[in-house]
Length: 281
Image 1 (cartoon, rainbow, N blue to C red):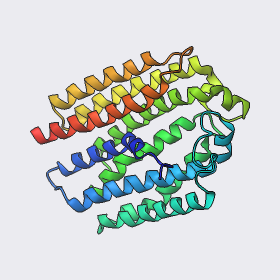
Image 2 (cartoon, rainbow, N blue to C red):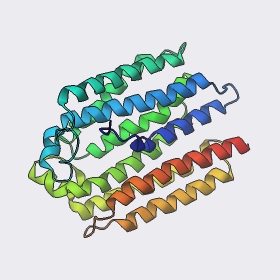
Image 3 (tube, helix red, strand yellow):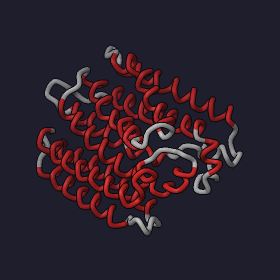
């Protein structure tokens, strides 16, 4: 309906699919269409519920921010009851989708706490400047959840992949938030760009992405990958560094290019080389 951009799901869905493929490649696991459907449905429903909830919680802030005034709720395109209904429907869809993993009960048992954590991010900006890493922690659950849903245990490979997401998402969310640094200060909202200044926030984002690059090499080393995935990791590392050359403290005009297009290439690219590497083996 336009409230939720499905394209934004590429920030986490490819990592969930990569973790699932890694889990299926284990000698004591095998691919199941039912599990693939479960991963896809859970990811789409959970992300849609959390994003719609965020739009509800932030509708007054969005109305006051010139950059976000055209969003559906502040612009009056959609009503609050309609978005609430959509949020609840997606939440129910998420919980129902975990039933596809039975007799593994972990996805169903953890669905409520996970959904609460995802939605809790919407309030983070009101009390902590580290809100970017709450979002990062929410998205880093995707590979761990996919692995747990398929294998029933948490092991090292998805945890390392989750670490990559944590520092990658935290870094690019800081970049994106630089656009609202002045607005956040005026409204007494918390963010690292508002606290550190844009230049300081860009340095923090750069360090975060260096840690993400280190995490990708750890995934290659401990995830049973070969030279194909290593080549992809090197390419993605170059893209991450290039992302920082596009955004400067005195010129934020290319933030959207760095945020949407390059990060979509990074996530989908890692998924592609990961699948190719596993298939080639």
